[in-house]
Image (cartoon, rainbow over all chains, first blue to last red; front, side, top):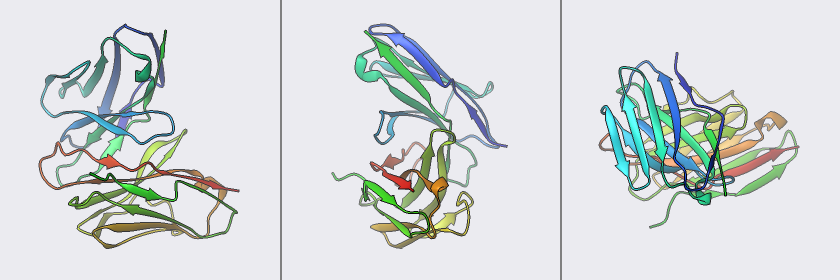
Length: 111
Length: 115
C-alpha cells in the first residue's frame, strides 16, 4: 500500500528553528515534494528531493533519506507568516505523474 | 503569467443538484489534476489527464462524479446528483512534461457546500 505520515500539528516561536518530519511507504519512489498551504489558499511548491541529502533554499531546507523512507523540512528564523500547513508528497511509480500527499502538518508560530 | 484558474470560488447548493466545477490550466502545461481536500482525508487525487486524455480515474469516488477535458485549456468536474458528503474544497492543478522535478501548480480551489 501507499502511506505517508506527518505529525498533525506543531507549534514554535518566532525566530526559532522547526523540523517537520515525513515518513513514507510507497510501491516506488521518484521524488518527494514539500508544499506550503496557508489557510483558505492553494498549496504552493517549496522543494523537491530525489537524491539523498540536504537541499537548501533560503530559510527553508529539505532532507531526504531514501533507505529510511524519511524526509524533513527545516524552517529557520521562523516568521509569523510561516504559520501554515506543510504537505509532504511522494511521486511513486515511474510511469505515473501522480503525487501521493500526506495529510499535512499544521504549524503555528507564536510571537 | 496567469496561474491555474478555477471557477466558481464558492458554491452552495442543495442535495440532489448538479454541480459543475471548471478549470483552466497554465498555458503550455499538458498535465491536469483534480483533487479533493477535506480535514479528515487531506488532499486526494480524483483524476488526472495528459494531453486531454484521462490517464487515471481510480480516485473518482463513484459514478456520480465525472470529468472531461475537451481541449488543452479547459476541464470540468461534474457531480450529479450531489450529496452532503461531497462538501469539500476541490483543487485543480497543472504541470508540464519533463523532468520528474516539475511541480504541480494549484488553482485557488472551489469551496463546495452541499446542504
